[in-house]
Amino acid sequence: MTKPIPFDEEIVLDPKRYIVSETDAKGKITFCNDYFMEVSGYNDAELMGQPHNIVRHPDMPKIVFKLLWQTISAGKNINAVVKNLAKDGRYYWIFTEFESRRDTDTGEIIGYSASRKKISKHVIEIIADIYAEVLKVEHSDGIDASERHLSLLLKEKGDDIEFADMMEEIHRFY
Image 1 (cartoon, rainbow, N blue to C red):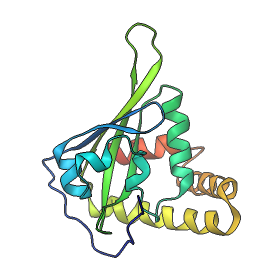
Image 2 (image 1 turned 180 degrees about the horizontal axis):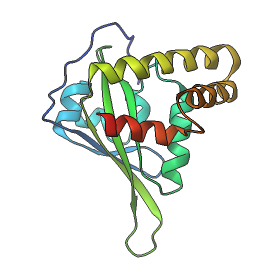
Image 3 (image 1 turned 180 degrees about the vertical axis):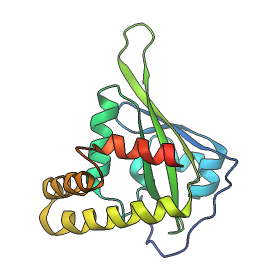
Image 4 (image 1 turned 60 degrees about the vertical axis):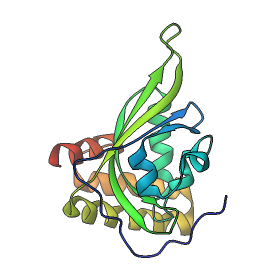
């Protein structure tokens, strides 16, 4: 499936509705609710079995997803602000709560669930600037350099704050 060409039109989300999806342990979509399909513009057949990054917007730094995967793969839950890309090229910003799903018998991670909701324009403005700066470094110097740059940006925001802590602070603020 080819990625849509992004353009600068935001999808207005309903603040009372959640976008929900589940993936297997490798990140392939196994479930999505009707609102996910409505907002993303994809139907059930187009989404099931696809990598969840089908909705990844190119404005998102890869390092954000690397850090997310490191966290949830270790069985820890995390919150994150993400800009997604709809099938028609529009975008939507969401606050996402990621959780690991485990096999009840073995405790092994079998997948992940994510619940997303609308976030305030103020939060978007803050995080969009950080992501744009990190993405610029990522494009010029690679993902390792973008991780170092993100760490420096976070240290400017507070003593030794980690990515997960920054997202948790945003969650509390929101």
